[in-house]
Image (cartoon, rainbow, N blue to C red; front, side):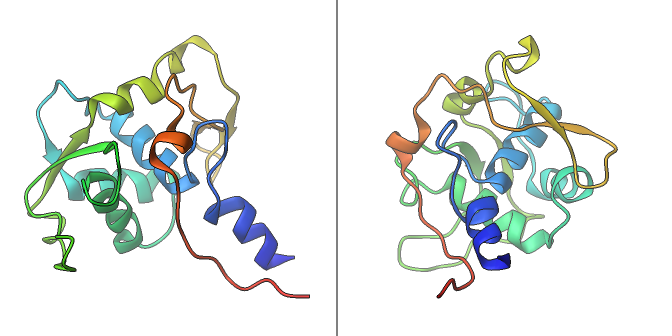
Length: 158
């Protein structure tokens, strides 16, 4: 039961917006910070802090790795995060530490979150019940089709 709940709840993207929960929480945090494509970059560490503090109570490295992947042109066909600094290479070089990189939402991400303020999606409580977060994004972009998905999960056997 646990393995299946992890696969369904975390490892697979929701077909409605093409995002995994951590991707959704990162983009939502960036949106709440006003970190849009046409605004100045913010330190990655600031975004990571908001994500783990308000929406995703897991390790900072896991959240930063997600941000890095969303900013890599060799990992995403259409990057969802616009990064400034060293975000690694296709040859396996690691990204710089989060204190050295800066991010903002890519222009396409703005379309993933468009109309969020118009009650177009359901909202659910965050992990501690202090904030409300979107269950899915009201995307205008078929993200799962344009970017696909990959990931790992705990084993599931019979």
